[in-house]
Image 1 (spheres, rainbow, N blue to C red):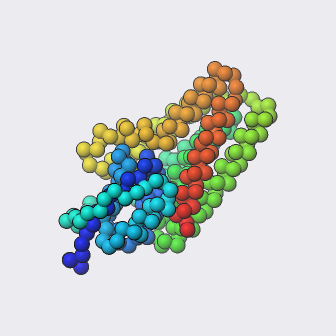
Image 2 (cartoon, one colour):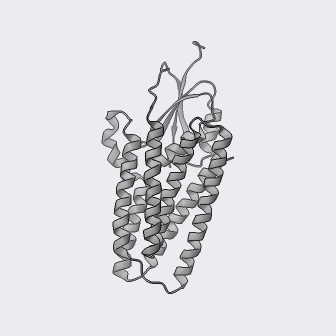
Image 3 (cartoon, rainbow, N blue to C red):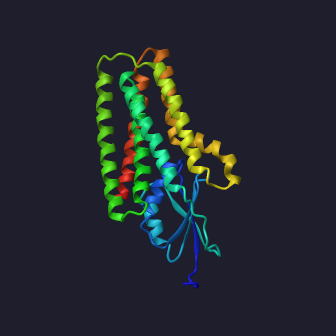
Length: 269
């Protein structure tokens, strides 16, 4: 075994813009026994895989996720020891809890405030909870259990998003009370802070040289863009005295939720 050659293969993952995609990749690659270590560089959208043997199984697993991943280079490496993050399970549990709490908060306030933007964003938070949950349950678990959980999570997300689309259509063609724009803004600001905390917690174990990139990671995250979109929709609801901006942002987020669900379902194949 001492003569086994270690390789380092670097992939570019264009659609890996937040830790949610990182966890999808970790889960997808969990069943590839030749992998010894994964090194994620989210700001630069790159993943270094340390492995033995051919790269084909690794590349196929990455391509199946639909994140636009492609191989850049494979080279031999002398690195055979890697720092293990003993707090990974605790971190996953923490960010899962944050996302799930905000799913409840945004769903509740969204229904009360008549805002489909908040309801849709709550489902996006739930989607992240599913991803972290899948990764958490996969720790020490079997590949079959991981795939079963992924399928259940993906189908549940799609069902909720389809119900949300139906509600958007009903409100678009019906006469509805205007959403409470102030509630939309306040809750979205807190959700923005929560997403920032999650990103910080998941990245704090990285090397200190990357600390200066943390701010850029937050602002390039899809979750943060969604939060800002809901805030903008709330302002437009107030200025235009119309619920259409809220319905538009809700529709956009529901589409993103379904896209995320299809990625999760690919893990269940």
